[in-house]
Picture 1: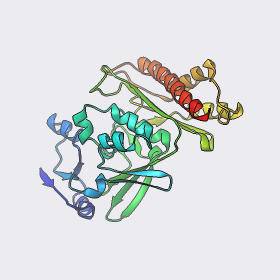
Picture 2: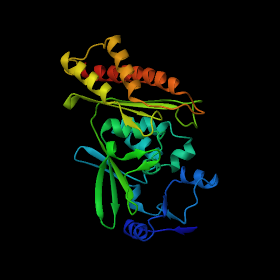
Picture 3: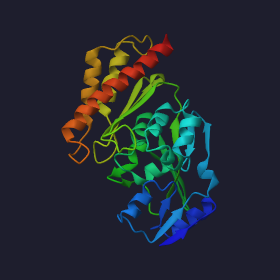
Picture 4: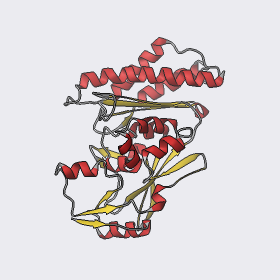
Length: 290
């Protein structure tokens, strides 16, 4: 196995063009597990840890551009106020050691249905920035996940950043696992309120072949809040609204039975997570509007 260590992004893209089969490695929290269990044996690894520009973030035009090499710990500490949903999801990843190494870019590259940050990226309307020697393009998060551990990258492309809108509105993330930490999600849920455009973002993880939006739930809740004037004058949400929202979120999933949980349990858990997340987010929104 060749170990390629570019010092600049241009060099990394050139190497990826020459060796499209090379597997990128940054934190290594997914790749090293696959290597250790002999689930993958690539001919080359492309180490991205020396590329400084991938470890930077900046804010412009109403969004934060998070470099693909920015670790979860820095998202929590430096971007928690701007990107609350992404910070919440980052706090649930592994242990402190894993959060110091793991990155959102790596999470996207692995494209696991159980990746913790995926539902948040879908709910907030993030876009993924990818590059090759042919140029740079952006892919909406909604079009990035193609199947179990399959994404929309071309063989010669690398993920360079993710662009996340800054809305200043409440966001929530919650997941169920077989224990409180160091756990792969049995299922997960993310919610983002978008009052400026009267919209809601909701997405599920670890409950379908890919992370996915709960579109019917989004439409139901945004329609309810708009028709009742709740965006402008927020009041308590009816239990029936929360319950129906939870039901629609569960209906968006198509889970399987596996060692972590049954399909039926995942659907039930998602409905509960959705109701709770909506309650927390709406309480936050009502408090800010008061």
